[in-house]
Image 1 (cartoon, rainbow, N blue to C red):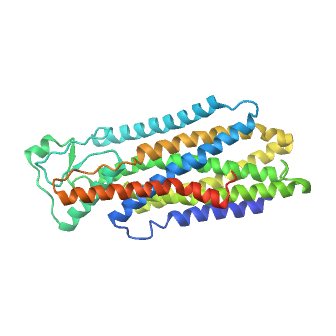
Image 2 (cartoon, one colour):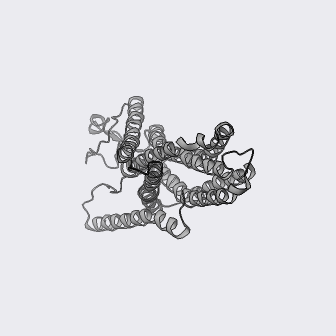
Image 3 (tube, rainbow, N blue to C red):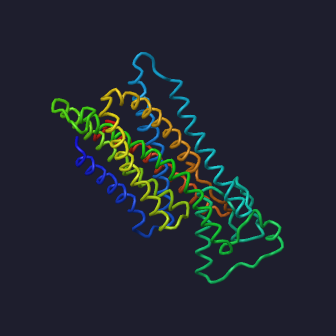
Length: 359
């Protein structure tokens, strides 16, 4: 496969991810729709990790070790990816907490004597409630007066409209680990596409061989289609998660643009670097690439699991209400959320099975 074909594939991947991810940003979504999209995005992240990324890494590493499956490497890569995101996210929250004099870990204390108070919470769901309450306060044109109990609990509560900039900063801090994990996987996708393009050229992009071109072209097309299939729902999951985290739409577009450009950038860098090395050592230069790519994919599996289960918790905790009707509504909302999560979990696997998956 030549460089022009690779450029076309990169343009389609980047443009497709940007277009699909921009769908939630192009419409005014209600809180109900946003919550459902967020649940679907959580399921998509889980489904991508469990149904696509981790199996891909296992297959890649196993093909590089046909004698004995590298179970220890697989386990270490998954644990390392999960731990990396854990440390990164805690460092981000610690920095945010020192800047705004809040604790890095979530706090759920909420005094009943302060109506409308919103819990200061580092989790995405709490930030969504903060922004909603802030918008309501701005629309009403009134701010709730401070009381002695409010002052005593100042480090644990937040009065809507009093700290909008702090809420925005916490939203950005929470969005960084999420985007980073997805960008790392997108770069690994680019590495897979670039290496398949090199294989299509017989390891010598500058001197292609006709006898290996047919198989290589087919491999590159399969890899491209597989990337196109699962990058679209991943882009959708990214934007819905960022919106649920109360990140401004302008910042959401920036995060989406970085994610969309990651795979084309990774593919072009891989093609350029290994074209130079391949012209000197042929396919032997690419032999360690399979192992490294497999380990990298497994690392991404660990990061996806952390993003989906910790940054985007499946169980949606909501404030307790005494009213029976509200309790029934919350129960119905929880069931609906779980249903959307389940649909999102199976969606990447179904799409990959129907259209074929050939990473």
